[in-house]
Amino acid sequence: MLKKTVILTVATTTLALSFGMGVAAEQERTQQQKQIQTQEQIYGSQMMTPQEREEYRSRMRTAKTVEEREQIRREHHERMKTLAKERGITLPDEPPTRGGGMGPGSGMGPGSGMGPGGGMGPGGGRNR
Image 1 (cartoon, rainbow, N blue to C red):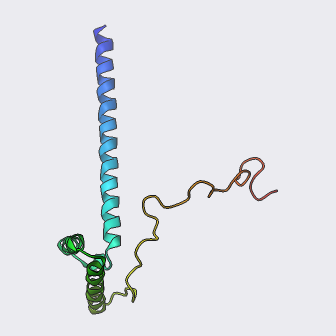
Image 2: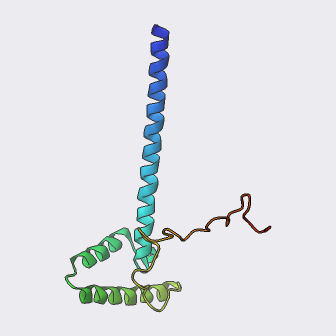
Image 3: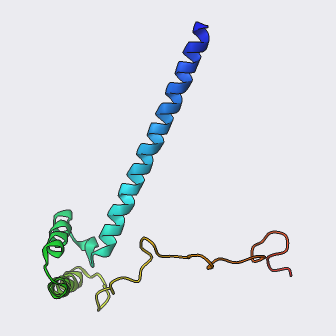
């Protein structure tokens, strides 16, 4: 009986640790993805320090109107173009457009798939 209890305890502990490590790894991946997405959303972020990115985000958060945010974006864009030119980096002439990306909630919704018979299984594919 003691042997079964020890084996069960070891197995349970092993599973719990494995699950915990998996959850921690997933959380780390999620955090890294958020960081990458955030950096990609700031024009020229690859040329900015973490402090500069945070200052830009803070200015955007505290802007009171859409016009004020657009002005901050335009000024930031001009600054990034100047830095890029000094560093020999090519950036687009115009700031990226707002929205329209594949953010949360975007993508294929109902009815946007291949439909019946469109796959590679029996009855589908190229050999019709």
